[in-house]
Length: 247
Image (cartoon, rainbow, N blue to C red; front, side, top):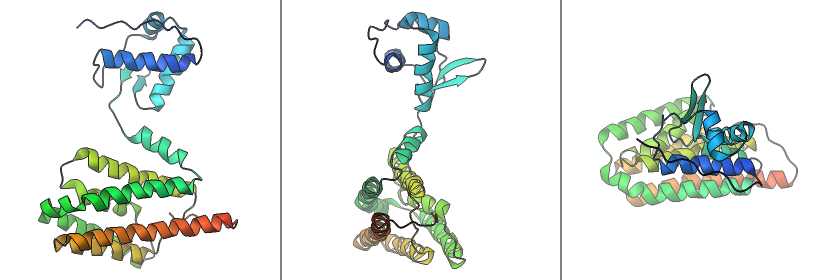
């Protein structure tokens, strides 16, 4: 396959940004799949008309975004898409911004409450069984006064796995993780573990009973509880209070 060459850069300001844009365009124009080896640094720098240092700055930026991957002694490769760089940047950007965390929570709430109806229509016994097992583990942790972040994340993923919509599941995962990581940044106090377990158990009860209105009500109530935690932390922050990290 004959690859299209990159056009030399014409803009001097923010050269590393121009390098990133040209590398992205090169990947798109040639339809390069994940795992494709790019030309050597020297050739890329020559095609772009920039120094190797400028090229490397652009490559490092694209590595941080998950677009490229440099394998020492081998070369530069197109990287498979991943939500992780987006997630890390989103969570970092939310650090200390309780209002933005509220907005992320509202997106999660809208997605889950709005789409739970399809889950009720298509969920099978196996998925309900896994939800029950996850809730049982939550209860065991809660009774010991422990938090259960991993099972909480799994629970919300399992709620929508039956819809066979990988993008939806990933989005829900991303917003769950972004909220969790951002909460850690601002030391949000967690809700009572027993209350959190009861919320999740009630959601499963409603889903198993095929009760859409109750499932929506229980999900909404669950998120309302988290919203109150954020509101309490905002009040304490405005008053100059501090909290021990428990998330």
